[in-house]
Structure formats: C-alpha cells, structure tokens
Image 1 (cartoon, rainbow, N blue to C red):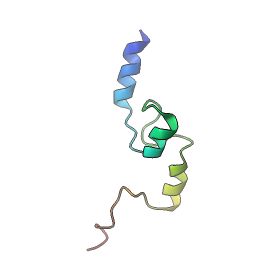
Image 2 (image 1 turned 60 degrees about the vertical axis):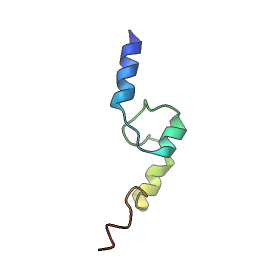
Image 3 (image 1 turned 45 degrees about the vertical axis):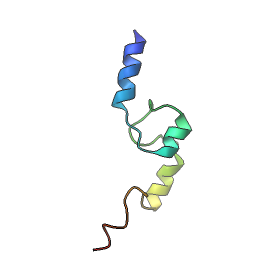
Image 4 (image 1 turned 120 degrees about the vertical axis):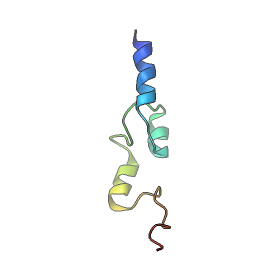
Length: 58
C-alpha cells in the first residue's frame, strides 16, 4: 500500500521554505530546500531572512 508510505513521508519531510513549498506544491520532496530552489543560491551569498538582525544588535 503506497498510501501509507506517502502519508508518512509528508510528515517526515518538513520544508521550511516558502519558495520551495510554492515551487513544488507539495511538502514531499526534500528536507529544507529543493535541489532547484532559487532560495538556495540567495542563502549561499546572502543571509536567510529567517534570522532577524536582533541578535547582531547586542
């Protein structure tokens, strides 16, 4: 039965990227980012918006 496996994968995989979620449409691909997510390139050069500058303000 593939239905059971599909359900488990959805819960196991957690995508925390709006772009990945929008790009794929389903949270059933990879953990975090997709292999072709445009955000990966941005994160590699720029800091992710997930980290607020409040920590730097110390």
